[in-house]
Every structure is written in C-alpha cells, then in structure tokens.
Length: 243
Image 1 (tube, one colour):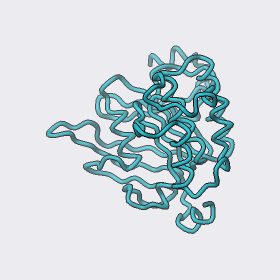
Image 2 (image 1 turned 45 degrees about the vertical axis):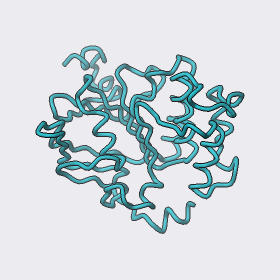
Image 3 (image 1 turned 90 degrees about the horizontal axis):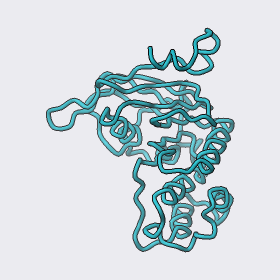
C-alpha cells in the first residue's frame, strides 16, 4: 500500500491547504472565505459554537460535500473526493459514526483491512481494540454498543489505516476520561509519525497540546495563538481565550 500511495501522490508544502472555501445550504451561507493550512506532523484544534459549520467544513475536507467556492489541496494536489489514491491518505471520523447493521465490530475492521489490501492483523487494529477496551466485545454488533463504544470503534478503524491526514469531528465528546487519555496518546503518536490531524472539540484537552488553534464563528475562520505561543509571550491561556 505504501508503494501505491507514493506512486499516486505528489508531495506539496502542506498536508492540507484550504483557500477561500465557501459552502451554502439552500440560500444561506454556512461559511465563506475559509483559508488555512496544516503542516505534516502537526495537530490543529477546530472550535466554534454549535451551528457554526464545523461538521460541514469537515465533510467538505473529506470529500463528502461539495463546497460552493474555493480549493482544497491534499499534499499539494487538488482534492475533490474523487481520487482513490488521495482518499487512501485520509481518514475521517464524523461526529456520529455510522456502521453496517449486519457486520460485527471485528467484521467491520476486516472489511476495511481487505479494502486497503492489508493482511488480517497487519495494521495493529487488535492492539487498538485492546487499548480502548473493545477487544472482548469485538464479536458484537455496533448497534449493541454504547455511544462511547461506537466512537472508539470508529477511531480504531481510522487509526488502524495509518492515514497521513486524519480528520476527527468531536472525537472526545462521548469518551470517558480514561479513553480520552488513550486517544490523546494515539493522536500524539500519529503526529510523531508525521501525520497531520484536524480535530474539532468544544473544550480544552488537557492531555494533548495542539500546534494550531482555529475557530469557526460568524461564517468566518479565525486562527488563534497556540498554547506554546501564548506562554512564550507570557499570556495566560484564560486571557487569550477571552480576547
């Protein structure tokens, strides 16, 4: 699979580059003029009030929705969701993951492994299931899972694919504190491996420090100082958050 990825991709300056993106639902603009970039080996947090368009932005970035205007580049190549080689570089977990009714959790994982031409067990999915406490429940149907367990399964499937670009919409929301800490460790591991991650959240994640902070509000995207930048200027995080 790595050989296919290299053959199908041209390396660009950023893992993700978004320019002047706009989306309209019926006659209403959800957001417009959204521009930002994401480096390889970095994590960006996306915040914003309910209804600000964060999930819609994720769907556009994942190729699930078509923006009205603007461009998206993934590793220097224009992206609209139709290029299979590009899609293999990306893993997207929506805020409400959806599963097949007639497949167990284990069968979901095997299905994705075969789709990505990975030998059974070759992607570390079993270890991820263990880390999230799902391994003993692997033969159950996701419909019998709690919301938190379904979230964990979606994260296992995404992380096992070892994507170079990971898009996570509210991954911490349904997780208990222990699982949240596990997730933060796994996301930091992915960052250290060189992956780029965009993560939306409504609250601070004490166990993970992002490289970039983005806020979507009033149909515009704003970049805020990261925690490391705040501290370097002697600005207390609570003061910066309220500015």
